[in-house]
Image (cartoon, rainbow, N blue to C red):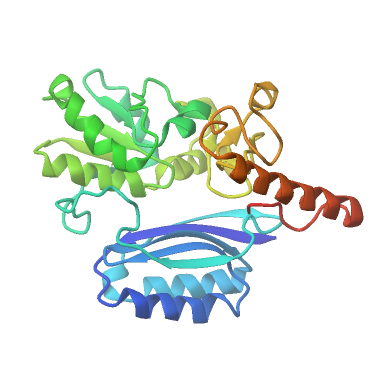
Length: 303
């Protein structure tokens, strides 16, 4: 059994390139897979590996004083949900494109999962899902507003268009693991909103801690790896994945016009060129050949 760790921390990183090299030296020999982002504002990522390797990574990242408070959530997987290790340098660990927003300096108030239901059921609280539209489509909290954004960097423009309607009311926000809603609360604080809250640890911690009989969550939670989605208790859900656009697919989605296994789905059929689709078809053909020769390969194309 492998351990999957989702992590992030907003903190000043003086030398992101050096931190990237140190992470490579630690993770690659230990067989850790997944994706880590390093930027001047902190670190973010999800990785998988053996227990000892993941413990070493945690000790390394949580050691510096600036990293105290590192957000770290674990779940289990029988096989690696990632094909390889990627550690990248970025301008931001979650892209919003707002230079005046600094989550390392000011954010909203954390709310633990055990206190979340009482907060969001208060009659005057505005509940906002800060994730992308295709994530919201497969699951969200009861009564949450869906901004309908395709990318997180679209959220500031959505808020600027709607803030007058929501003015004067407490705002509670949430996302998958906590990083996007934490940055969104920093945006709202910078815009002058006084009462801003966000779900500590995100949907994943809520699903881990809250019993289904008491839960306000409806549906499944999309995760950006081969598990595709998780439910209560962080158990894998029942969704598939479009290998072209990496969006989730239900059984019904596979019956819609535009779906071709490994090539396209109804959402992305117009997003790629004929040349792209030809490349995707060849990738799928190679995958099918490998599957027939050897049974299920260790990783799927596009992983």
